[in-house]
Image 1: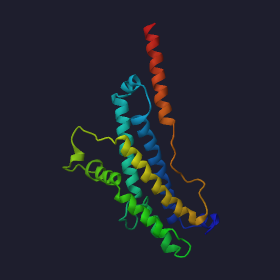
Image 2: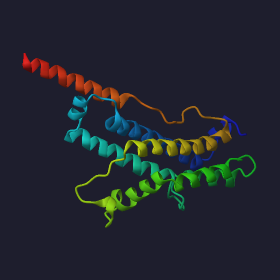
Image 3: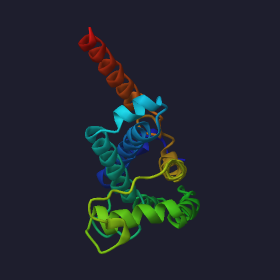
Image 4: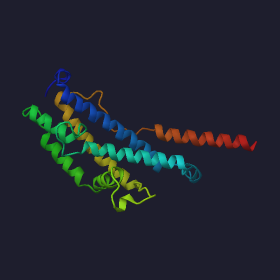
Length: 211
């Protein structure tokens, strides 16, 4: 295993890809926590009704859109030159090429990435990105005036493949015996707390109006 100093002296090319993937993982994690809070947070029936307005519906759409686009970057498997700087495939292959003896996780990472790409949820993610979010193809996922939201089971399945993708990233930086400063998945309560604060504020305003 290499040392932290080896990472610090690493060429900017590899360090740049580490940083880009790290940022992408942070974005996906934040988007997921917001989407899940907006869609499946535990609220009363009345509170759920209040949240189903135009503003929060759009925020839910935005969180899912961002989640799909960012996560697909991590699983790009056909990248050349300067393309795909967020690709776990790219980082995995670069480390094997530079450290054929020290980097022993390449095969394991490839197998994990293949398993992710075979899942139903990943097929849906790529179809959404390719047929609807990134293009406007004649496809059932691209129906005008209709946005297809993930159900709770799909959201939980997505979390599973996201955690597997993070495991691949962990294997890559384990080469240097480091980890501090890299983002992992976290269940942030910030979005849920924001929604609860919004509801409390709205209730207080309504009580004031009724007086």
